Length: 467
Image 1: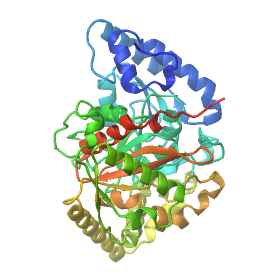
Image 2: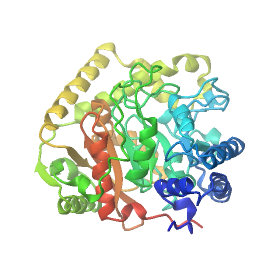
Image 3: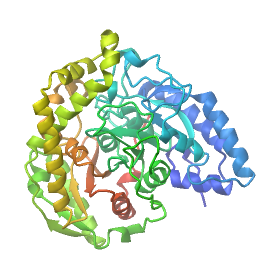
Image 4: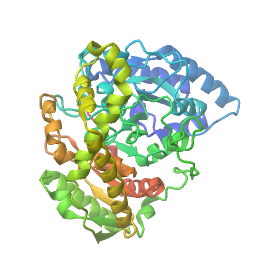
């Protein structure tokens, strides 16, 4: 029997089952979530724009369709939210920057069109770091608050996506990732987030940070929920010539319970995992790998290369491509930019020969990693080397790029997918997380592995306590 006692924290897949059976009403669900946003988000600040009227119109349409037998699938009638960098026809999209505060597109991003075609209800637009990189722009008020431990950074740049999903303000959200922006907030908020293979999800109608590094992916409370969303947004788009033409296999239907980890070859380099990493986090990863072994996984020792040059190259490429994307707006209105201006200015100064060297390093690392994946299926790693960072420490973040870049941006350089999921709670109540990195287009393997782990553990079921 469906337990509806705590609707905002229900699994998306359970909500979908309730909607399909008639036990849950899309209209009532949407009204419930909008009321919760009004009650809770005054403190959390995860939404930049709650599109209540449009959401209720979508909910009424979904309810009518479902009652008449026109059920579209697991997202039909389910309230979700999106990071404020996806174009939506007629709706302001700010990219978290004062420079873009008046931007309104006359078309929607392909991923938004696909969500709406699947019958999803979009509750609103979520806060992010300016330009998906710099600090939160002060024009938009207080930055999102960590739902578990106040004062701590909830990750970024998809900060609002992480907070809203963890706090039960939506059943799933979309984020973007150029160097860790899905993985950081998924990790610190106890979520399951997928950074897909580069090109697996269309970027048409999405504000750009770095064209050759950006990926769009789901942020949810379980691997099964993320698979349901990914089924809808993945796939080729003729409007995005960089999107991949590989068929979408049906990720949710392919999950196999704990047996999804059977014979999984897990390539472990403890020198990589543990070097200058918080001991609590290392221990949680050890325990998670023991769980994988208990359900059929097999640990295979590997040796990853030194990653310092890859980390430096990722930053150089990101800054150069960022400057290229924003150049016209920046030249016309430099005062509209906050901290992002510093990144843009650095991007203008990089020498062509250094940029060329960075792209060569990118291709080199992709080849090295591909060779490793001939021996293993997944590689476990932290997402960041420390557990928790206070907001007043964020100015030190770029100084620590050599530390956290080796777990984040290097996999954008390789263009490979990674899935992030919770594996514990630390001593002050912050979620602990790990990521599994896979080879090109191995999202099905990553979903099965994370789902198998979540069938054997309950870390993904932990929820923040909100007053």
